[in-house]
Image (cartoon, rainbow, N blue to C red; front, side, top):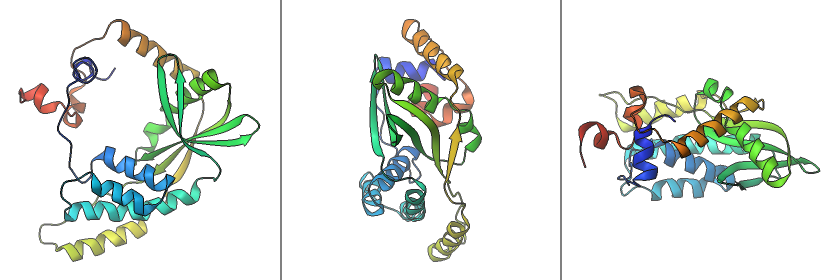
Length: 230
């Protein structure tokens, strides 16, 4: 929906890209945060480090941030739920980060995000789609929908700053960091209809033109698409 050309490269052509070894790779950080909430900090940091062929100071600093967040996230998540609950309904396959029973055949849904984009998630249709498909597939009733939002810290090392001095400043920033929060969102049937309509249109008539240029710099196919590099 965002970019037909990206959709073609990824899902029609099946083009693979080289791994992104940036220390702040959002996918790797997100997976590590999920692992920490589900299991523990030690396993999460080991999983993060194992992805990279070499660990630099920047990787260690990202692990410092993760260490500070994981325990806080675990404390605000109610106990007794199931991690990574798989939903299958027709062609839809999804994974609920955390499914919590709250009454007979009644559940709350939680999704974990390592992000500061609170307003974006207030209007997201993701959890509405999970509720719709879970109730269709399994007959479960869903009571509440929550995003668990873990805030990111973004500070840069100054040119004349030593590693020790920067890490002291980073520790102070971590101490001042806002705590993770649970953001409750309302079920929105219109969001589900939009999702179903878009999926149907893409399957029946995939549009292959390029999408919004402002998103291109975050695309894994940017150099291939815009510069012709292979």
